[in-house]
Amino acid sequence: MLLLAGDIGGTKTSLALYATESGLRVPLSEARLPSADFGDLGSLVLEFLSHTELRPDRASFGVAGPVVDGRVSVTNLPWVIDERELEAKLGIAPVRLLNDLESIANAIPLLEAEDLHVLNGAPPKEAGAIAVVAPGTGLGEAFLTWEGTRYAAQPSEGGHADFAPTNPLEIGLLKYLWERYAHVSYERVCSGLGIPNIYAYLRDSGYAAEPAWLAQELAQTEDPTPIIVNTALDPSKPCELCLGTLDTFVSILGAEAGNLALDTLATGGVYLGGGIPPRILPALERAHFMRSFYNKGRFSELLARIPVYVIMNPNVALLGAAAFGLTL
Image (cartoon, rainbow, N blue to C red; front, side, top):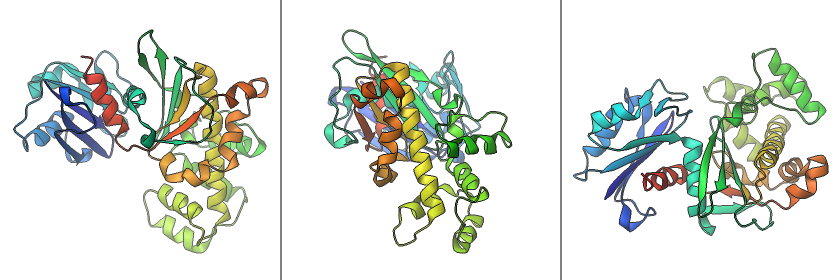
């Protein structure tokens, strides 16, 4: 049996074909295509399949956005995807959609030691719930619960919950963003979209001066996040403003990861996914992240017993979508 799996993002879409009896680590065919070059997912998939003689028997796609009744409006992409319409266009049945964070969650039980970077050494509790927090362009969250014989992934839109500041600087950040947004969620401050918000607040509040060379670089780009992050991590370009931005981001991420650990009682571990955590490992290994993660008052001791990992495998969402496809 041949399985087609996909990780559908606003920038790129990753697709792969698997012979299910051979496992999911080595696909028969794989490609990444620019999502915006296509009017819909069906057209993109047909382009991928035109380069191979293999024809899948079933398909599963992880999509950035909430899936309701087999239908989803893709976040950051003008696509509406419907399972039945895809089945008709592709000539494949069944086709199933799942949230992109649900995809990542499905992959967690399949990850191996080389796929992970350990941030603390606490041992996971057998059959304990597992939490997934994934800052990328946006902030995704999901969790897994033990169903007696296996883990089941549960989707969430927790990244859009209200941002809760934990110190005076973050209170100032919340007030600053209240003047600009009708709703200040964690995604507004804990994602690739949120990093420029933190930077702007620190700059405008006088936290540190903005170097002229940096202001010039930022004025010439549509996406300031990579410049801010790379400058913060580059010791040859000391910039207090960028360092403060990244430290604030990491502290907020630690606090929200701890929140989700409490929400789900994630004694099986907390996993950091998305594109940002692997890029900022030095910042995550400083005290800010774990200090914020543990800072839960009477429950700090409980948080100290929960392991935290960074997912280093860049294909984790694709792997999870494929794992879900095996259950169809």
